[in-house]
Image (cartoon, rainbow, N blue to C red; front, side, top):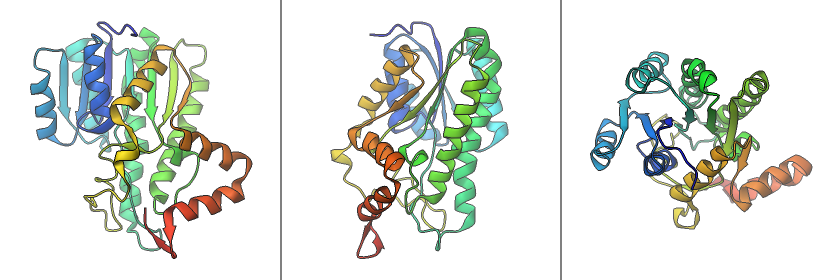
Length: 268
């Protein structure tokens, strides 16, 4: 098992799914963990379940710059430094562009892209000192635009390009920059996905039982961090999608349409 004893690990979106699994696994590995999320009750439950462990929780909306700044300042006040930042928090959507309210797209960009930028900016001075790791949990949708997820794909394309840029800028600093792109993973992200009106749809259109679990995904991420990898693309379906989109883009269009549509209607 990788050794993270007394390392300070900051994870956004730790109340559900991959983020929660990361919090719990890093605590088991001896790390000092800080996490934030919008849902105060879920954070409280998480803290109660780990009351004997070094876990700091903050209620925050990472789409809000001040919330991000307060969160990171709170981490420094409690732990003094940051070794690993995992930008995990994010939201998805399910709506055709012809029907979606533009405010929904803006919220996706504020949370998925700007939240990643804010938390990284406020953490960077400390990560530079520790020669630590910056992680962003992106998506296959950041390589291949998905129908019904135009705003989600746009935000993840932005994250992918931005991470590549700062990786190059930080190349000589000793800081590792890891981009994680899970395939379909069983988590709360589809239940919380916004519909055309910007309201959480409250259900998943997919069979979650056949997907990689959040716990397994978290294990892969932790292993990649310990090996200081630069990219992690998960699941056979995810790797295949990236490959086909790169070398056979027209075929990718047809296969993606077939997967998400039935009789001309968006079904997934």
